[in-house]
Image (cartoon, rainbow, N blue to C red; front, side, top):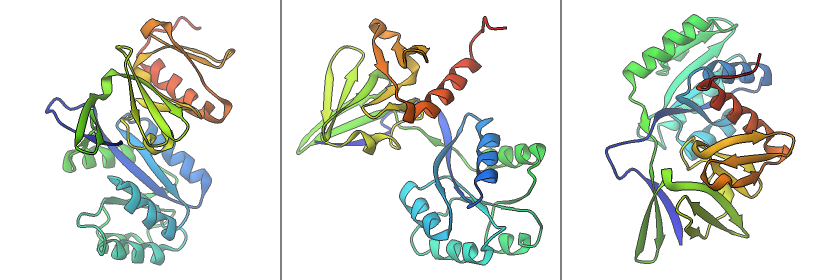
Length: 257
């Protein structure tokens, strides 16, 4: 049995853009992710340090937007963009980033959507992203899983999944009605395929964050709304938990001072 994720209905789940950053500078990389994190509909698909990693990431993840730091090896990146035409019919939106305007003309000539100067200007970024949203339709996140086994097709709504649990080289989909569906692929293979409300919290678990009611850092446990079920989270996925807490806190009334 194997799994594909498809859109079967017109009532799509949330729209979003995925992006990839090509940048060897960890500081500017994190800063850009911080700015983009202000917009809930932009999700990081991959990070790459050079043009070789970059073209592989673009072909593998098919991001909607690609950010390229042109401060180093600019001509190599321009060559990479030209090479992409050999493999894909529609290039992603490409935004160049640089400390100077030296590469602006070449960026425009190579079909870049925009060119951002560093240090980043929040107002310019906001205008650019709003223009992007206006001109480039966002993709609808898939809301249906299709489990295929030979000539048998089983369709599952992602909203009905509580969590995924690793079972050796297979994965169990635990549903809110108590049923369990199996797919003979590893848990890792689903990390970048599921909608963004699914987050990896443990080597053995990916959880549907829509069902989380409590996060206990002391006990390293997430409690689900459904039957108060508890799932552990591990230190290696602590950053995912921190990001999840931030997202959940945006739409809550806090009693903290």
